Amino acid sequence: MSGTWFHMTAAELGREIGKGRINPVELAEAFFERIAEHSLSPRIYARLTETRARGEAVAAAARAASGFRKGPLDGVPVSWKDLFDTAGTATEAGSALLAGRVPEADAEVLETATLSGLVCLGKTHMSELAFSGLGLNPVTATPPCLNDEAAVSGGSSSGAAASVAFGLAPAAIGSDTGGSVRIPAAWNDLIGLKTSHGRLSLRGTVPLCGEFDTLGPLAHSVEDCALLLAALEGGRPVDLTGADLSGTRLAVLETVALDDLRARPARGFEDACTRLARAGARIERISAPEIAEAMALTGILYTAEAYGIWRETIEAAPEKMFPPILERFRAGGTFLAADYVAAWRRLRDLRGVWAARVAGFDAVLLPTSPILPPDAARLMRDGDYYVTENLLALRNTRIGNLTGGCALTLPTSEPSCGISLMAPPMGEERLLRLGAAADRALG
Image (tube, rainbow, N blue to C red):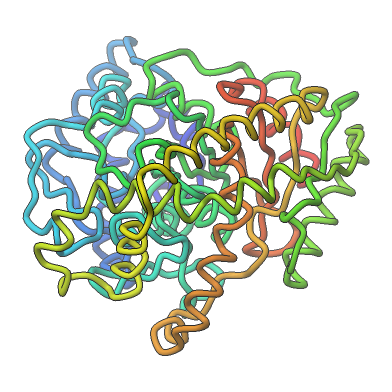
């Protein structure tokens, strides 16, 4: 029976626990056994939290037996990206710079999720300090991609996606500063939710760019994402029943987002749009010059803050870093403070223009990534290929971070190709209902 557990959603596992058909202790042990036996697990998990998980599972089993479960996911195990502080367990953010860093307390979202009954399986590998959309990390490990084990899995929540895609966790928690939940979710045929900036607490998470950092789940279903969001913030999940696309207005963003699409992502996106229209959505195409202008600001907005946060740590031991990541951080030291302030003032103006443009739409559609997962070996030996693919990987997802809203990526008919729905800030409930209806339409 346990063999079927690895193919169930987190919500399905939670319902079976509630019915008394699955014991949380047996569930956790089954996943640990699978992790121990799986040949790819060392490239996916940085470290396991077995003692903690077993204690949490025992408590969840007792609550289930007494009929006092804390929520629909009480007793369900999940993995955590290695930038969430975990009390007594190393949290190193994929970097040798943080080797041996052991926090004394949990990140606030991990603490809240634990109080909601989630069981912490362990910490997953990630791009170094979260500063790459590829998932390539020769310093610690490069997780595999579901559809091509020679390819990268997408970053920076690379191990998070791989843990779910390869059946080593029912769901995972990652972070998204420029696409780090959505890219690995799309490249591994998963669903990923980028929450609005400020929706979930960042306390106790290793930062990259505090002004853009967000957190979110990677899972097999929109329902899972809704339940995990509630668990992360200690709230009630949105009701997805009756979600329907009839009468909805969806905008396809043509500016920037459709440039230089590779063949398969283009096919997957167009097929998805056709299916959404057949399900009753009214789809219109829009141009947004403000998006092109906002994209031109990303160099200063991202790298200046990232280097400001990490400069002292990096320059104390730069030889410990993967050179392309080191170079990207150091680029932030070339900007003036006055230019950084001016860039942020301009971005806030552009966000207002964007909000007015899309106010009449329920969501904005775009391909999650214009490219497929690149080959890991070629990324290591071909510097130009690395730069080109890294910038393209994050281009479309970064639009969601620049505009400040929430976003959901769904799989399309083409493997490793996702379609994203973007919604206004703090619009997760509406977005998840749209996503549930869209996912059914996409099949």
